[in-house]
Length: 170
Image (cartoon, rainbow, N blue to C red; front, side, top):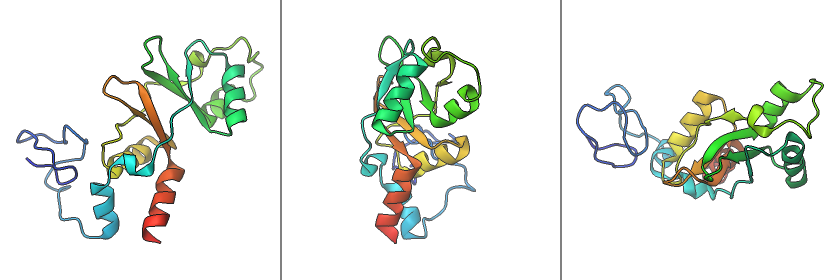
């Protein structure tokens, strides 16, 4: 079955596209009606011009990670393992929910203990609809993009999606 979103030819009977993870169940497959829907289904995530993520390794201290986030005025850092593969993400939400109000010595605590492990991620060639769906379903504001070896190569935020929609349709 050909995916209506990305055009990938899938095996008959699969529930989701192997390329972009768009649902292929009959009730979800329909004609795209509006310019917004068409754009979300046809445009790839790379059209958002993802920025290179700031990365830290698992052994980085909270103090170092927070300092990076403050200095660069960003809301997250991507955490990589020893092989440079995506291991987790440390966001402002993690800091508020897991760190704030605790009597912790940030110079002795490791990012590994407070990050969100195995975060949702995507590839830059996936459709915008896939990124938006993953962000909504998982209630996340940052979506790391990985290469074929699961190494971080970019990151998008909900603000990037909103800015794209505003520029394109308003």
